[in-house]
Length: 112
Image (cartoon, rainbow, N blue to C red):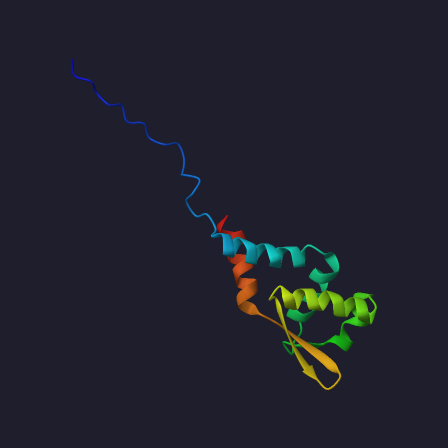
């Protein structure tokens, strides 16, 4: 008696297709965690929408409705997450968006 092997086609892609590497997942999670706070999300949008491509910390206090120490804390979280850069000029800090980091977030959201 000859046995035949029945071949089954899979219904979908294997779960390991397109899986993020652990280091990439950790990095993305840090950025998403920073953006999970509404105040930080607003502050990032203020910097990102600045016509000068940079914003002085002094210009973020009033529109955010937060105190200077609170704005400073939130901005530090965004800098630590790699979403913003900070440059000290005298007593003020100036912030810029890191476009590559925002692109990474967009890419992972678009591909899933």
